[in-house]
View 1 (cartoon, helix red, strand yellow):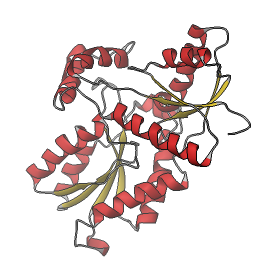
View 2 (tube, rainbow, N blue to C red):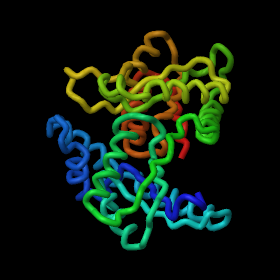
View 3 (cartoon, one colour):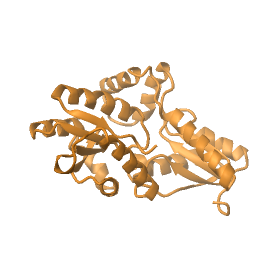
View 4 (cartoon, rainbow, N blue to C red):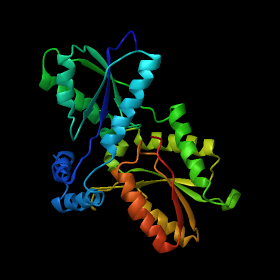
Length: 290
């Protein structure tokens, strides 16, 4: 780092900060995608349920503050910049500021642990687009490798899972079932990326470290039309299947997400939790690694 880079750039998805931001934010997210407006308005209600504010921006501010303190104490002393894909601070504005500050070469840390179009390649496209718009003198940005199998990422997820296991008294063959969840994507997108392979590797490593043997990788938060095949099983279908098997204890571990943003707070803590209550299943949600 000390020899090769003169800045660190945090790249993230972005999220609304107030109710008035929600629709413009979702329009940014869905631009160019064939998603009916009715679906967009349905998702907007998820944000309104929490006052229109996603926690993701505050989580990035906390991350930047923590990393800044670490770099100040241990080095290298690099300035940290932050740019989002879908909301302020937009990546192009950040790249323009970096050029103004004389930054020549930055390490780009993407807050997504897995290789997929939206979690990896699209960020590379975002970088190239921002550099093209800023023009001559824009800094080189080198995307850092994904971290789905990094030892500390695995340990952090395993620690959160063990904490959730502590809410149950059963053990051994009667231990709670663990559903590892990740954002669903179209099958066509999954086939052209290492997404599913990496998720299975992460789930296997986390389960092994936490001493869990009864687990399954499932998916959540799909947004495409019903006619388009996406990764399955969906978490709600999986919960119903567990109920039919007679299982009444469940831990949901959202390993596909780095922090507790909207897909976790609404899709799991609200919708999945309500379904479990309805079916009489004791559900605990493991924390995310962040």
